[in-house]
Each structure stands twice: as structure tokens, then as C-alpha cells.
Image (cartoon, rainbow, N blue to C red; front, side, top):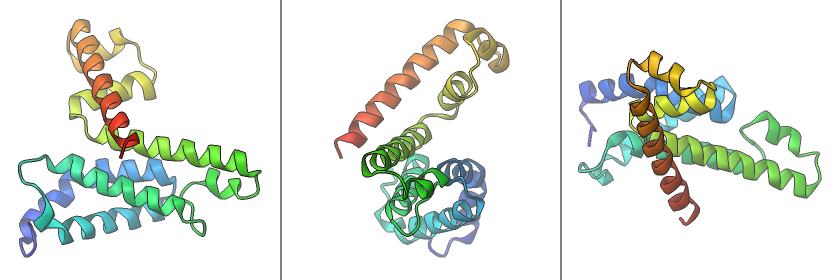
Length: 169
């Protein structure tokens, strides 16, 4: 896809650096791991470029690669990605499995959020991650409250569908 096309590669790196690295940081809670996984994500994406279906959107594809790499890293016993999973090694098996399940759910949710359009993802983040109410979101976004409700409904439906398909894969 972009092999040998350095300007295109640079554009992709700059376009996705902040949102992709931010997602990886939220998943790993470790800057060094986020840096490493970010680099590995782009190495894998560029190496798999010939397999990329150009009729599909690039952003969900690269975020899926990143989330899967983070998930794989967390599963490796010698290098779990979060402090919670590192501390979980000393916990009873059932509690450790619960912590791992929560981390996997979080990774799946991050991947599903990455598949939303920027305007839908922002509305979901403001509502559920930052706890803003619909009137506040409407003021921030400069849109009517009804549009906030509509976008939120649409985004939640897409998240539900993405999480269901992830569960069945």
C-alpha cells in the first residue's frame, strides 16, 4: 500500500499519532508500552499494506491492529499491560480471571470507539467518560440538543453492534 511512499506514510503517522497513541496509553497505562505498541502497529500496518482493502476505511483497520496488539501483550503472562493485571498475579484465580475479562472488555470497547466517526466518538466520550449532560454537550459542540441525542443513539447502536461482532469472532 504505502511501501516506498514516504510522504503518504508520514501523513498517516501524523494523522493518527495522537488518537492512536492515546488509545494505546489508556489501554496500557504505560507510556513506554504505548510508544512501543504504536510503532509496532505502524510496522504491521505498512507490512500488511497489500492486504488492506482500499474500499474500507483506514482508521478502524489500524485501530483494530493496535487494540489487538495491546490485547495480545496483556495476555502474555510475563508482560501484562496494566498495573491491575500485574497486581492480579497474586490474587486468587477467579479474581484474576475477572480482572483479565474486564481488561479485554475495555480493549474491545476502545476498538469499537475507534470505529466511530470523530463526531460520534466525541459525543460518547463527553457523555460517558467525562460525565457531561446533553445540554452541556450541545453547547460545547454548538449543535441542538436533539442532534446530540440522535448522535448518541446512533453511536451507541454502532458500539453495541461492534461489541457483539467482536464477541462472536
